[in-house]
Each structure stands twice: as structure tokens, then as C-alpha cells.
Amino acid sequence: MEMVSTMDQENEVRECRNVVCMRGIVKHFPGVLANDHVDFELREGEVHALLGENGAGKSTLMNILAGLYRQDEGLIEVNGKEVKFNSPRDAIAAGIGMVHQHFMLVPSQSVTENILLGLSEPRFRLNLPHYDAVVAQMAEEYGLHVDPRAKIWQLSVGEQQRVELLKMLYRGAEILIMDEPTAVLAPSEIDDLFVTLRAMTQKGKSITFISHKLHEVMAISNRVTVLRKGKVTSSGINIADTSRAGLANLMVGREVVFRVDKNEQEPGDVILSVDNIHAENNKGLKALNGITLNVRAGEIVGLAGVAGNGQRELADVITGLRKASEGQVIIGGEDITNLSPKAGIRKGVSHIPEDRTHVGTAPNLSVTDNVIMKNYTEEPIGKGWMVNDTAATKYARELKKAFDIIVPNVHTSVRLLSGGNLQKVILAREISKKPELLIAMQPTRGLDVGAIEGVQRLLLLQREAGSAVLLVSEELEELLSLSDRIYVIYEGEIMGEVADGDIEKIGLMMTGMQMEDIRLQGEKSNE
Image (cartoon, rainbow, N blue to C red):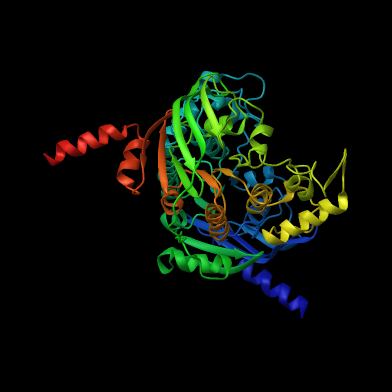
């Protein structure tokens, strides 16, 4: 029976008319079945979204197609021919290129140098002006506007992503895999990316778009395949035949509430007071220019703004990770300006950082080691200079269960976790301390719809418990849904404060207009 089944599968693959056909793909990792007999097809000139929760197996499937992994079982066919990839070089030779969520670029080299890196031509002598012109022409053709001579470190995140796309196009990729391409982009950069992707499909390119964001999937894709726990729950649905709610149900296996309800409550005393803070960024340039704001107990205060306008530097100053050149940070009535992070922790400050891999966790340490980082000196986990391994493991298992961290065991290195489960580890550590003040930086970035709902509920629970929450997010919908008040930041300055959720005012302030100017403009139009 097994022989007949295999033959039937092979016949089915031979009949496939699409540019990519994957049949019966199986991939195991220690303790995890990442892909369980997955089928996937990609047509010429389409954007095919691959949707699923964190850890559903999306990236694993596409890493197999890109030559980074070898499948344990199953067949892959590209343009009617069966292929077996031993490396990404083999995949590129077959016309398949992958743009990863974390870019593979050399910061000190130019755009053109990065694009040529690893190629056999040019071999001995690099005529850089010639190749700059070639790259510029390709950039113009696809609307990927970037200076070929610029160094990577000088580029914005959106521009760096364009360089990754140009790398793949220069290598002749006809099939592009985009892994969470919008996770690190500002809203305007996302719009630019979508224009580029549509231009590519019009030229016959085929794109697989891995994402968690349902509104983006609805906006850009022609068809969608949904994975849940390594299996396909729905394959190749026409986007016109489905809805955001329907896709969410297929992803998580239940109805998802897109707008969380928060109870009305009167905020308490001011917990965080930031007064006239000035600070520099990592390049020594002015990042914060007189920031003043406050957060009270039992309220969520949102901070809106396009990425790179001082949000990270402000969070760093509040949590003691960056020095302020001027101004005060007062928490619970105590001035902790420029003191160490330990001073903030003693005052009940918890921090969900923007960079969960390099700042929020120690990737090579276990789940247990990561969740005890704030209380390893306290009993029963800490005993003098020693850590009680039994107590630490018990504590980690309790948090694993309470926060639904999907991992084989608490001794697993966190570098092996999906983005959503890594975020749960950070949330478990920070929220379990029952904070007085919670600084939440992009807490739902890169998470699936089910995980987003869970994180937002946790933030509301902290509000109800009386914590002061400063929520920094680029998702306006999230800020409007969760926040009691919203400050808007632009080029290191607070443009104003909104308590009525007026999107138009927030949008104007995000582009640099002061609240006072908006009021005056409104008064003149009413005269």
C-alpha cells in the first residue's frame, strides 16, 4: 500500500503545472515535527501568502525550498523538474532566492559590494563604477530606490531590505521567498514594499510571502495557504474568497477577537515622570530633545511614531540602559536618572525590549536561565552564591505552563524558539515580577494573530492590577485599542497628547506637526 501511495504521489507531482510544487514535505527537529506531510504550490506571477502561528512550520518549509534545510521526506519540483537542494547556492541556480527577516548584509561595505559578495564574477578586478551603474539600473527598473554607493550602516531598515531584494534579483531569482518582510518596517516602508512586490509579479516573478499580519496578507496576496502545528489546514485559497476572520480561525483553530475590551477605571498616582530628557543615539547624534511625559498607576499610555524617532532611546534612558545628558527620570517619587538598570528593577520596573534576541534574552542559555535573570539571587531560587537548580526548574515549568510557552522542556536553549515563544519567555520573566511600571517596546511585533491577542490581554491585566504601562508601538490600531492616552513622538520631541483616539491628529503629529498648530489650523477652518 505504501508503494502505491508513493507512486501516486510521484505521478501527481509530474502533473503539476506550477513553477513550484512541494509534495508530502516532512521535517523533524529534536523533539519537534516542524512539517508534517505539507503540500504547497506556487504559480507564475502571483503573491502566495504562507500564514500560520509562530512555530507552525512556515519558515521551515521555505528554508527547505531555499536550500537551507533538507527535507526528511517529500518531493520538490521547480518548473516541471524534480530538484534536490544541498545548499542555497543550488536553490539560486534553480532561480529561488530568500530574503530573511534578519538581513545578511555587511554593514561596512557598500550596496554594490554587498550585492556582488560571494559571486564568481567579477573575479580578479572590480570595476566598481561599472557595477554601481548596473545596480542603479536594476534598482530603477524595479522601483527599489537605493544609492549603490551608500554603506549599509547608513541605510534605513527599509533600504536594507531593498538591497536584499536586489541581491536576489541580480542573481537571477524568478521565485522570491519573503520571510516576515514587514516585521521591521515602518508603515510607509510597508507601502513601498508592496508597490515593489506588485511590480515584480507584473514582470512574471513569483513570490511567497510569509507573514502573521492578516491585513497585509489580505492587501498583497493572490492566494494563501495556512499552516497549523506543522500541517496544512487550508491550501491555495483565493484571497477574494476568504476574510480576515476566516483566516484567523484557520490559523489558531478558534474565533479570534480583533479588538480587546478594556474596562473603564480611574488611574492612580503618577508612577513614571519623564521631565525634559535629552539624550544621544549610538552614533553620538541627538536622539531625544526635551521629552516630557508621565504614566499613572492603572493606565496604559501609548507612544506613537514612525520607527527611528527616539522611541528606543527613550526606553533605554528610562530603564538605565542609556545615559541622559539632561533632564530627570522619576519612578515612584525617586529620581533614578542615569542610575544602573538594577535601580529601576528595585523600583519595580519591567522592560519588554524591542530587540528580543540580543537585548531581551541570552540566546545560548536555557528557558530556565532566562526566566530567572531577575530573581536568581532571591530565595528559594538563590541561596547565597548558588542557584538552587531544583527550585529554578520548578519556577520555569510553572511559567512555561502559565504563559503557554511551547518548548520541549525548560532546559532548551531559547535560540531554538520561534519568535512568539521567545516573546512569551520575556513576558513570563517581566510580568511574573508584578511590576509597578512596565515598559513594553513593540510587544506584538512579528507575532501571529493568536499570540497578539494573548499579549494584549496580558497588558490589560497589568493595567487592571494597577501597573503603569508605557506601550511603544508602530501599530496604530493596537495603540488605539489599548491606550488610555497617546503621546506622539517625532524626531525626539513630543508633538502632543491625544486622549480621544483622533487618528487624524495622531497622523499629522507623526509627520511633525505640533498639537498646538493642529488646534490653530482647526480654529481657522471653522471661522
